[in-house]
Amino acid sequence: MATCSICGKRAVTGNQVSHSNIKTKRTWAPNLQRVKLLVNGTPRRAYVCTRCLRSGKVQRAI
Image 1: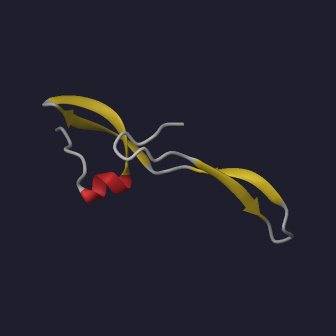
Image 2: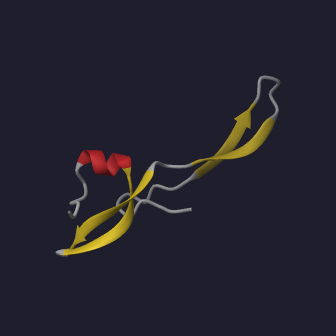
Image 3: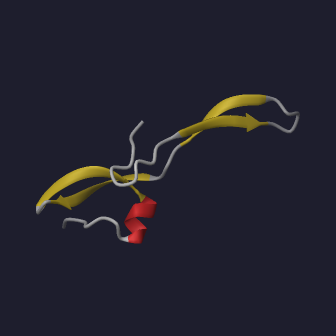
């Protein structure tokens, strides 16, 4: 799966636990958006998580 190009956040795995305590594997995926960024003055597409977008860690290209 893709990772955030700013903070490195990616999918994590764990157990889904039912009411009868049966455990099955599942993944939790981060909310990644493919956005156009300014990197060294040139626009570039990258995957960025919404937390980095909201906190202003990236400069979006228009």
